[in-house]
Length: 164
Image (cartoon, rainbow, N blue to C red; front, side):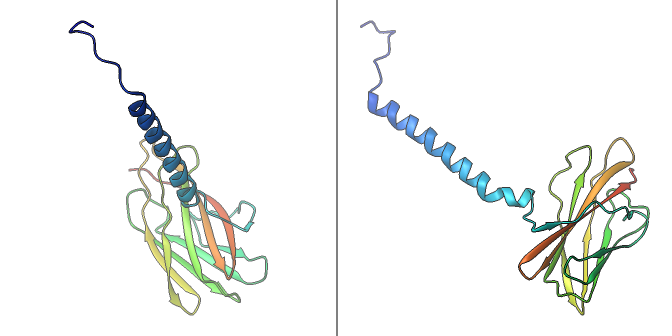
């Protein structure tokens, strides 16, 4: 063997590296499996797309088992990069939790799902802001996630947000 040649590696070291790579891939897959529900929420009932424009007015959701939830976002029209006031008022139903999942229709804009605070007496409130899109107006989908007991109801809405 000459001085420029490297001695062969022991087979045990190569096996150890291969096992560590396999273990890292398994851990990455398990983390993806555990965290996936954050990006796509678990829902039991998905209502059809509403024709109500949340960007212009408050909208009412009729729940499958009775009751209603009125949802509003202010100010109007909905701006990008400015604080938004989120409000929900529940009538004739028991609701434990309300979240609003904001997603860009034509462009992925990141995870944006604020939890509305339960103020009592069927009133929920929260804040959010939408990232800016360089193209000006941008279509958004707001999916209102309503947890009633063991059922999660998804009510999707579409609106446009004004750019900067």
